[in-house]
Image (cartoon, rainbow, N blue to C red; front, side, top):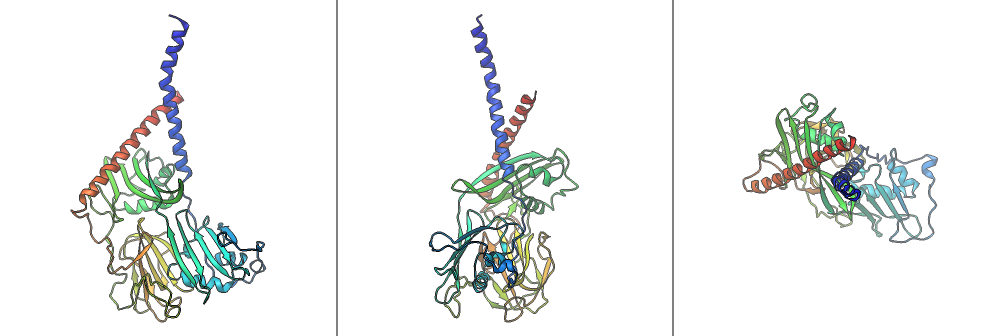
Length: 442
């Protein structure tokens, strides 16, 4: 046979190997992207709305422009670690009185308390560069809020923008080596997502004592994209952990709750009432409430419960405390995140009994009611929020059952089947990747 024949034969035999090596490199590249996108834990920026009397605060750091363009902000500032919100406003030339007016408008929303390093502030000033005409706060590419000045009285109107974007699924499959958090972090699971998973499955698995090296995990992570760019918003859609011959699973249903593969809830149903006893509602939930003086829309995003100071305030569901703070208008208050869908807020407290980052359970006493902040008397202001939208907790459809209804069971089972298929395909890819890595190393 000719040398040309043997050359072709060698090329023919090498082609599948080269194809596999190329596929392995692509898979490794994708995994590196997932890990790189993992969230870092970040602290909220303190408000500290007291008057700033230092020389640094009195000085304006940036040179003011000589003209105003309604479409272009005078200043755009990305919040840094260690920043103080009030000093930022003063440095950027926002009058103290305007800052307080913005805070007063935000009393019904408390969005500025959730600022973190990396968020962007955009500031528009009037033609004389004396007043704040608009403040835009960008939390993510998909989520921002706007405060726009009303010329007649200097108050501000609040507007929230949440873009739907496109959500993409990322099935992550791997093995336990070391702690659970260390193992999943390598695959792009953030610290907050890990805390959510361990809180969700705490009654099914002791993550410190029960897990063994070599146990397998499968996590379906969803990420939001705006015009092809990751917004930073993520959601855990499903989890499966293989431990000692058993499979511990959790699937997110359309009601925002997690259920095992049989449709039984993994979370306690919510309590409708945030106090151990019932008291009179002095001011109800009213999204269309008008301000008594300006007659502008001033929604009441929760309900005021007229209870005596010192009354036990209880968590209405299992969750993680994401914020404990003291606000000039809302007083001492607590925010609890219940999974990725639900959030509750408890305002005007006299004493806070939990700390930020703490896991709490339904019915746990978390605070004492009071009259802190701007109030006319002692009461508890309670809010129930579904996917960033406040609802009337007395009438809203919130999870109160322990299993999926017969009517919703077929849709849930279809979702479980689809998720498991994604896990199956991801495991096949991981297996091929392992084979190719071994082949390349040899």
